Length: 72
Image (tube, rainbow, N blue to C red; front, side, top):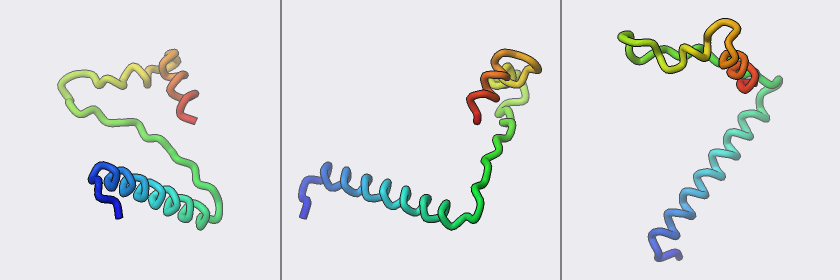
């Protein structure tokens, strides 16, 4: 029995992390073929001004090339 609340909380968090990892691995093993994650263009929160990510979608810009390179 663990009586220290901080230690008990740490063990509980680690147990949940392990459970989530194993659950995800079991689901991925059940998939017959690997699936590809497709990123979608984010939507701006405010319509009043340009979104912070607009510069990453400029045609032929370095930031757009970096976004595509680092998203794979």
